[in-house]
Image (tube, rainbow, N blue to C red; front, side, top):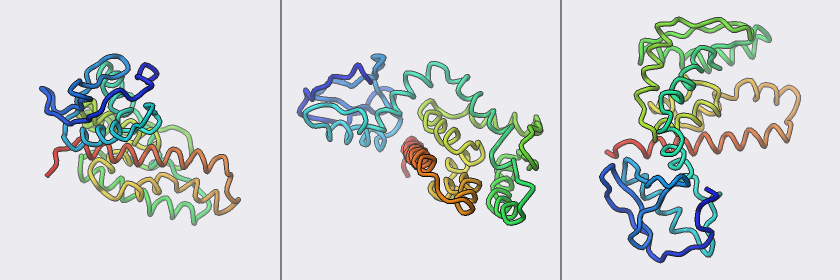
Length: 238
């Protein structure tokens, strides 16, 4: 984004149809990514979100205030050019998913993890036919190869735009299962984010809040919720 013009040079921001969906024009000229890729997005809703960011710029363009544009740039310049590799990397979370690694003690934490995560694993099996199994402790135990292959195919089916958002859903939560749950509307994104923080919440209850860790968690939460909004805008509007 360092290649963007630092000053606002246009008067009119418009959403227009494009051969690959929708785009945003500034005084009739299409916008491009930092790598000079013409920007297009799959839905008008997403294009309108981009247009709102560009229209909100005042004397100078501030990329920090343009998260939808930022994610679109990533989808076109980074994800689209290495789509299979990104999908493989995200699907690999399933073999060591956050929701599968459980504490052995204390009993209250064990129960809290089970109450939060067992329903997600049941949903995953019911929806995709992919059963992941909980483990006690932190030592890696491979999951069933058939289940992992099913989940891999689900991730590979995502478009570059969906995959760009999915990247943050998975990486910020540490869970392929939670990321998939967001994309299928299993619960509100903020509620699913809270399910990814069971261990951290427990630690805060026992020892108090670490302000630096809390600030980092809040940043991740913001990125997670933005990714959920972006993903939803990629889908055809009913």
